[in-house]
Amino acid sequence: MAPSNDGRGRLLGELRARGSRGGVIGEHRAMVSGRLTPSRVLSMVVVPVLLSALVALSLQPLGEVWRLALERLIPWLGLPGPIGFASATPSALFGFYVPHVTTPAPLPGVWHYWAVGGICALVLAVSLVLPVRFMPLRYYLRFATLIQLSSILYFAIRPDSFPYALPQYTLGFLQAGCAVLVLVPLVLGLTFYPFDIAVWRKVLLTAMVVGHMAVLLPLQVALHSYVVYHLSLLALPTMFFLWGLLIEVFVFVAFYGWGMSWPDAARATPALRGGQGRRGANAEGGAR
Image (cartoon, rainbow, N blue to C red):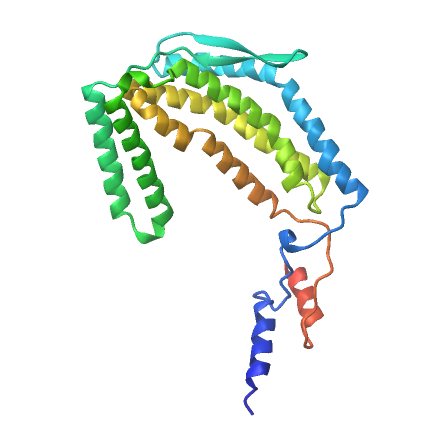
């Protein structure tokens, strides 16, 4: 006797909640409600604030490390000019120094328009021939082409009105990077620390995000300086919008997604109707 439509629907609903070995698939931690216990609230507020303060106090030695790194990278890339230092004083009681590149970048000439325009045409052609499975990359390349063409149009109309120079840009970029480093623990405190994950894992993820960005920022400055020096200020808007602090956002999201896959405290596994509900869940967990 064939099962009724209602019975078939219930059976399919239960099968959707089972894993490949027959165990119950529990809800993702982002969908599971939890209680804000005093210890968890403490870890959400106190720990991120302490970590943020520690990062802020580390900016002065970090700036010195950045200076040493740029003093090796910039000459290696063949860029002229020494590494400069600028003071940043967020408050009367706290200040630090931020290095920056002093390499000048030229206004675009005829050669720059042809070179950058040719690169835009090549990138656009690549985006048109990429397979469908690379659809996100196709749109990313087209967006990059749009940004670069807008920059070409701007400089073609008013080349002398561009308000930024390369040294000013690199200084502002690293200053903004310092602010991002200080904010990372606070943002994770609101988005990652509320979940039922061991505190040491939360601190570890915070340290990895901050450490990764601290290494990435001077490398970005060196890359941006190299590209803008050779392709003129035409390339500066594209470098900022596509390979500036947007990369730090990608880094944060990638680490956050990885951290959300870490194991948490044991939760009761929901049982399904039928004889294999709890046994299947236990078998699935044991097999893992």
